[in-house]
Image (cartoon, rainbow, N blue to C red; front, side, top):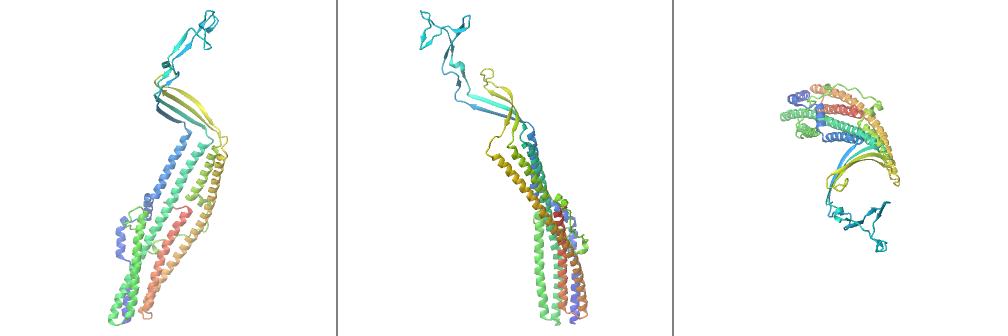
Length: 492
C-alpha cells in the first residue's frame, strides 16, 4: 500500500517538473507585442543615457571650437568707442597775449622798434620795445572739451604668429576626434551594462519558473505524504522532512522573485525608463533551455592585435591625446618666435582737430604693421616648451601601457569565453544525465528497489543541473559580449 501511494506521489511530481507552465507561457505570449528585445533595450539606453548625452554635447562643443580656431586665419574686424566728460576746457594761453610784429625793410623782415632822440631803441627791462604788437586773446585759443566722443574701427590680419594658429587648428580637430572616441567608448560601456542587466533578468526569470516548478513538486509531495500519514502508511518524520524542504524552497522562491523585481528596476533605470516600468523581455521563457539557442563557435586563441588596437575607441582617444600634446608643444614653441600682424584702422572723434578745432565728428584711416620679437624672459618660455614635451612623453607612455593592458584583456576575455562554452557543454550534458537519473529513480522506486530519499536526491540533482545550465547559458552570452567589447567589434 505504501509503495503504491509513494509511486502515485512521485509520478505526479515528475509530471509537474517536466510539464511547461502554461499560465506563465501565456503571459509571455500576451506580452509579446510590448516585449523588449535586447536591441530595443540597447537603443533605449543609448537614447536616454545622461552620460551619453553629455558626451554628444561635448562632441558638438568640440565642433564649434574647431570652427572658432579656423576663424583665426581670417582678419578680425573690431569697433571700439567711448565717451569722456571733462570738468575743464583746454586753453593754450594762460592770459591774453601780445606778439611783436616784423616789417619788411627791403632786405628782410625785422622788428620795427621804438627809438629815442638819439635814434637808438628804447630798452625796457633790458629788452627793446616794438612799435606794433599783435593782440591774441586767451579765448581765441581755448577749446571746449567738456564732452568728448571717440571711436575706432580696426582690422587685424595675422601674418605669422610662430605657428600658433596652425597648431591650435590641429588641436581643435584632434579634440573633436577625442570627444567622438570617448563617446564611442562610453556607448560600449552602456551596451555592456544593458546586456548584463538584460540577461540577469532572463536568468532570474528562468530560475523563478524553475523554483516555482520545484515548489509545486514539493507541495504535491507534501499533500500526498500527509494523506499517507493519516492512513498510517507513512511516519511524521517523513512529513517533517518534506515540510522542511518545502519551506526552504518557498524561501528560495521569494528570494528569486525579489531579485527578479530588483533586476527589472535596474534594467529600466539603465534604459532610461521609470524604475516601476514592468519590462517584459523577448528572451523570457518559462521553458528556457539549451534547445532555444544554438551553440556558439569557440573564441580564437590568437588575434591580430594591430586590428584590435585600431578598433578600440579608448586607445584611439589616448593616441589622439598624443597628437594634441604634440601640437601643444608647438604652441609653447610659438611663444619664443616672432609674431607679425597687419593692422588697419579708421579713428574718429568729436571734437576733432583735423582741420582746426571743431565740435563735430571727423576721422582718418591708418595702416601699419606690428612685430613682436621675444628677447629675454629668464627661461620662462623655454621651460614652458620643455614641460609640454614632457606631457607628450607621458601620453606616449600611457599609450604603450594601454596596449599592454588591452593585450591582457583580449587574452583573458578569450580564455573566459572558451571556458564558458566548455562549461555550457558540460552543464547540458549534466542536465541530460540529471533528467535520465530522475527517470531511472522514478522507475526504480516504482519497482520498490529505491527509497523515497533516493528519489528526493535525484530531484535535488535535477534542480541543481537546471540552475547551473541557466547560469552557463547566461555566462556564455556575457563573456561573448565582453569579448566583442575588448576586441572593438561590438555593434550597436
